[in-house]
Image (cartoon, rainbow, N blue to C red; front, side, top):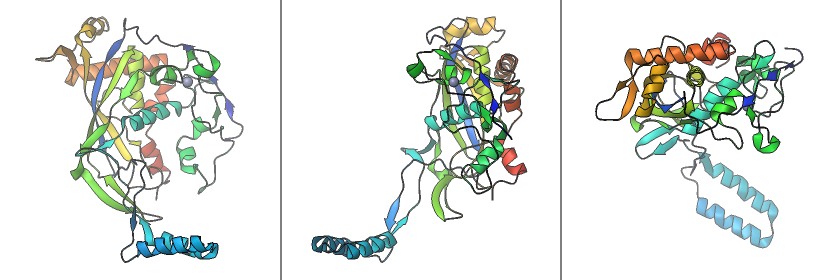
Length: 348
Ligand SMILES: [Zn+2]
């Protein structure tokens, strides 16, 4: 690695959010298909009282010790309480009968894949939002973030300077990832919804090394979701598709990593997107036409729908535009972090 590479972030005045001319608004319907177990934490920790533990007695003893001012005894009761409580299964976010990967998680995932795409010829179309300073050298195995650094080794050693922050700097020139996904003071133009499946896809797992208990989604599960977008140029739609792992000629993307334990455990965290259809309100029919694309109007709706060959054409056209405008993305289009994890033997 050596010294961090100084990289210039290319910024341009941000796209007005209401300018739809020559641009596209609509939704991508997609599946997130799991290739291993996947666990995305709901952020809640679950605890339960161990069988046979008398929690009522422990609480009473704690009260008595406090009354007497006997802090040594209170400490001992505290130890007993810690013994009496154990971690229960951590769950994913649920809505009714559905288990979900939240839209906010998807948004973060897509955004960080773009940020972690290495610069090209000393410049990058994407800033780095993370506050972690560029790495001077590859961290040793076992230290914090070492697997992340090995997978994304080129980007993490780059010094891209401060991230876009128009609220603080009053400079409304943004890098492409902030222009698309938003920045402090500027709304994003990509809005992933939750990706959900039925509870029957869930599987309880006890994971090494500390026997963490989680209820994950099993391999082969198809989580359904939609990604909304507004006023994206064709090249920006291409940037979105590449961030999802898609490449020219296929509606199915490269294997990516997501959720907890995605770096550490081989049977966790691998999934890929499959785009099913793109849908646009009817007012975009002429824009699609001007772009040389055609969608069919779905029966009974006012929407223009791209499916099958029409969808592949749209994906190809958008990705071609994106690669031409942001050549840096060629690297990401040919990258799969799940494959690198495997090739480097990072996960146990
Ligand atoms: Zn930025």
